[in-house]
Length: 315
Ligand code: CP
Image (cartoon, rainbow, N blue to C red):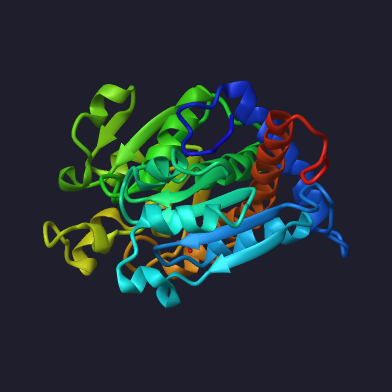
């Protein structure tokens, strides 16, 4: 494919191909010299219209480790602040001939719209509550490394499902790979119609966690709640926060995940989040760089093939 906008259009064998390549990049990233020339001569622009630590930093590192010229557009200091639209901003940058554009935007669908207007490859780095495909891919690689497989696992996704693009992308990916998925959270934070997606729904966290292999916690996304239901943090932690007592109901070797940023003491107990015997949260961050290197590499190969030459810039 030309772009990576969501998980929906990826087939299971394409997901496996990307994760296999990411596995190689994870090994490269553990070496002292981390460079490859897979993107040599190419230009990558990061455009983040919403805050980010993990995704922006890992795309920047991924691009640089693959030898691309990387530019991070400082949206808060750009002409967006003078009222320039998303599309005009994208067209302006497109005219500078980038090869890859990584975009995060608070509105669902904004990245798909932008991809129709430019002639480079576009990667969705999170759009509203819609999709965050590279997060689901890095979660998948983390699970595969920890559990030795990415199929026939029982996986609980817990918390604010309604506002979470991470939950949506994971639901699609983990479903495609034939896992059993449980969604756990208050009814007010469940999206309408999710019960028809072949998942099991639980409002009682203790019930939902019984015997699961993977516990994936989510951040309460207050910025997307539009003044609607905002639970008290203390009550929320009591009912839906993960602590050692609730985790004891999962399988004895269950792993704990959180995409970050996390609210310690709201979704997850801080000590448990730091427990390297159960928590793979730092592995998720590490796999983020590897997965983004793999995604950029595969898109660059497709770009070269579509341009009909072996390296960008060749006549
Ligand atoms: N998980 C994630 O997308 O984190 P950032 O918002 O820090 O990029």
